[in-house]
Length: 264
Image (tube, rainbow, N blue to C red; front, top):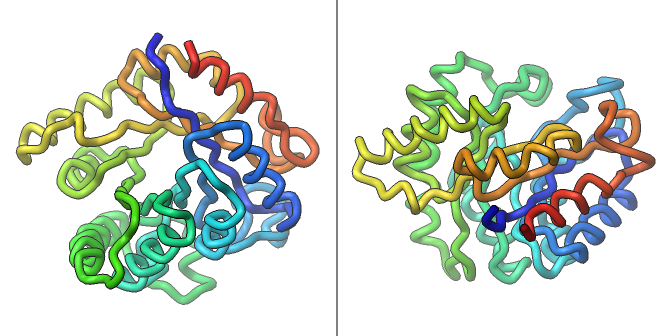
């Protein structure tokens, strides 16, 4: 099986900054290709009043705490930040990291984040419409920033909606993220190829990433690669998050397994 990229997606809830810094530094030293916090303002799992930290602030720290891995949010909630400001934030993290930033973005979905921080929730359709408008503004702002990004600063779009989201990926993104199971990923990957054909985009220009929600999915790595995945991203939360995923405070065993599998 061909080699694939390996990423780590961590959930910055029910943990401490000290443990988070150790996690991303350890993962970077292990040789992962990418590291990703999420973009939620409150815990999604476990105690809803538990500890939680903002994602883009963490990315700035990660940029100077790591040396090798690409860095991004999986994924930024588009409604939470002005798109021109978001482009500037991503450009700044790109400079801090020496050109290792990825601008991951999606339409947003966690209603509590919207309600408590004062953002209008709208509908799934309105949030996707807003996402497309933001993508246009982000690209325009990136072209005007001085200095420009030092790296490629690819845009990653997260989601699997076949009518709108995958069209946006075909039109605007250099990377795409969704999740399994394998058969579902393979089907959506094919739909993305079809959208590329419709909009005149070379499908090879879009890196296909897939989220593994559980360390037990490492066993499916070859199947995901056969289905078109190029970059497998393992999700990881602190102790007590989900059975089979983690240990106290973070169990890097499944990540080591995935790295070993990536080498063929």
